[in-house]
Structures are given as structure tokens and as C-alpha cells.
Amino acid sequence: MSRLPSSSNGSGAGAGRGQPAASASAPLEVKLSPAAEAALAAKGTKGVPPQPTAAPAPQGTGPVPAKEPSKEKLATLSTTVLQIEKAFGKGSIMKLDEKAYLAVPGISTGALSLDLALGGRGIPRGRIVEVFGPESSGKTTLALTCAANVQRDGGVAAFIDAEHALDPSWARKLGVNIDSLLVSQPDSGEQALEICEMLVRSRAVDLIVVDSVAALIPRSEIEGEMGDATVGAQARLMSQAMRKLTGVIARSSCTVLFINQIREKIGVMFGSPETTTGGRALKFYSSVRIDVRRTGAIKEGDVTVGNRTRARVVKNKVAPPFREAEFDIMFTEGISTAGDLLDLAVDSNVIEKSGAWFNYGQLRLGQGRENVKRYLKENGELALEVRRKVLAVRLAAPAPGSGAGAGAGGGKAEASEEPGDESD
Image (cartoon, rainbow, N blue to C red):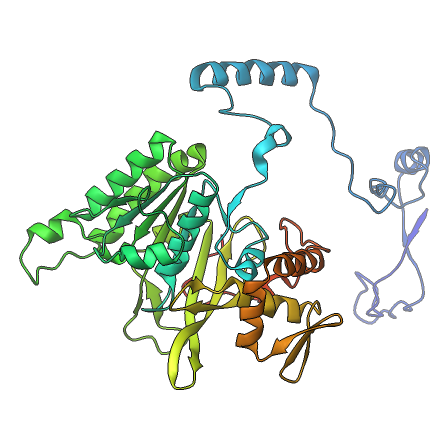
């Protein structure tokens, strides 16, 4: 005879009318056959079915160690890898830790604060980079400075001038060797991108600047009448170009820097109405996207001698994104390296600012920011010493995947991007 707990409603199951209800605490007796009693006893229970047991939890708090593949699977994989390398060449497939060149080298932008904001290396080599912003914000100046730094390191730079607006005298002021700079002024977007592809495939060019995406006019639009609608033609052109270029760019270690303009979307009630031209393909294929804005004017008396510029990294696949950098662009020299170094040194407590005076240890550098910039420019050895100390502070605690500290470039990581930006 087995006993099971009765229902909690206080009424016995199957009780007839007029019969007293069973007590809530009284157990309900169920009569089992002798064979059933014997079976339950053999299982080690008395009227209660056996309960399933849970698998033991892994010991420790760390991750569970991965199991090694079987020898047969490894042998098959090795044979397959050999067949792939025979068909497509050495290096077409490999284990991730076998890729010794995984650390991406870079090209300096000319502004130390922006280099640090990009991860300590500048813009990455072998990647697609987009620089966008309003007019006269410093986009072309930044691109030409990168070209000058490539030439200074013994590389070759090319400039595809789709806007037909390149100023050789300004390029020379920025340090560009115009005698060795390759320049093309194409007639259509297709011609510009075909020239870009041929230069990349040559593997002899280190940096290609395309100025600008908005000026890459499809041939169908050029051959049509003024006012003809060509909806999506430029976006389709850029999408096809990105698909063709992205693989060969990575293999050639050539950086392609696209300068882009901004437009405003119609009917946007919430969020930023700004967007870039050329569709979404360039946003997705770019490893780095830099938003360049003019924040103010630099004046000497009543004369404007430069612009204060802010560069925000809205996308970065080789370092933490959403960092900012501010620097001066002077009308006589371009990006002011001395002013950028001074701002970083003050922010890193390498140079002390007391009122209008700037002190480097016991050395008084001068009064006023412009005077100290001039002093650092005239004393190169002191500027190098300050630069080394700034880098020691900024790179003391590098963030994962980057060469810069958490506060590199004076920027801070944001929780979200601006509307219309992808950081996939």
C-alpha cells in the first residue's frame, strides 16, 4: 500500500455526495498490485518515480577548456589547406596566429593628437579610409599632409582630383613633393575608379587620395541632358567599386583615402539630418571614418590666420572608435604640429600652464599660446623631448586593440554614433 499526498483543496478525489470530505492533511491511499510494489522497491523508491539527475557543474570559475579536434579531422583539414594553397597561392588561408603582419601599420596624419585618437598609428595601411565634413573644414589639407608623410618615408602618393581644384602651391606648403606626386583629373567617376584600381593593383603606390566622392559623376549622367534624373547611379557605382577594390587594397598594403562631402536629408524631424554622398557602401567598407569640423577662427588682432579644427573618429576597425582630437590649421603652414604638441603636453601635465604663462619644469617657455608655439618651433630638440614625454604618458596604459591610452587624443568613448554612421 502506497501513500500519496492529497490535493490541497480539502476535498477528496472521487468523494460522493453526502460523504465527508477528506482532511487536508490526511494522505490519500492508493492500492498497488504486488507486482507494481515489487517493481518500485527494485528501483529503490516507494511509490515515487525516479528523478533525473543534473550534470555536474564544471569546476572553477574560468572558461571550460576546449576539446582538441580528432586526429582524423586534423589530417583531413591539413590536406584541404594544402589543396587551397596550391590552387590560390600561399597565404590564401592560414591560422590567425600565423599572420605575423596582423598588427596594422599606419600613416601619420600630421597631428599627433589625431594619430593617438586613431590608435597611436595614424590611418591604417591597406585599408579604405573616409574623411568627410563641411566645406573648408580641412579635409583636403589632412589628406595632403598624409601624402607628404608618405613621401617623407620613401613612399609614393597619388591624388585623383575629381573636383579639378588641387592647388600645387598649397600642397607645397604642406610639405608635398609635387614633382613626385601622381595627379589625375578624370572626366567621369568610372574613369577615376578604374585609374584607382590600376594604381592599387600595381602595388607600387602607398597612398591614393580621391577628392572627392561627390565629384565622381557617373558617365550616364555626363552624357545625359541637364536635369535628367539618374536616381542611385552614383551609389551603384560606388558599391561596385568597393566590392572590386577592398580585396586588392588589403593585399597591396595601399591606403585609399576618400574625401566626401555632406548633404542634408529632407524631412528628418529627429536626429541629425546630415548624411554623406555615394550611398552606404563606402560607410560599410571603410575601416576608418573621420568627421572633420571647423570649430573656430584663430586671430592675430583682427586678422584671421587659421582655423581651430575638431576631428572625430566615428568608425574605427583597428582601434577603439569615438575619440576626438583638436588641432590648429594655419593658413601659412597647414596643421600646426607645435600647437598640437603644446595642447597635448598641457593636457598630459608635461607642460604646466599658470595663467597666460607656460612652464616646462623650471624653464619658463613664454607668455601666450602663440608665443610658446613659436618657441617650440624654433627649439626642435626641446620639442622632441616634450613629444617623448607626452607619448610616454599617453601610451602608458594602452587600450585593447590600440596603441593609445584611454584618453588618447583628448577624446572619450561615446555610447553611440551619430545618426547614419555604421560601426560594424
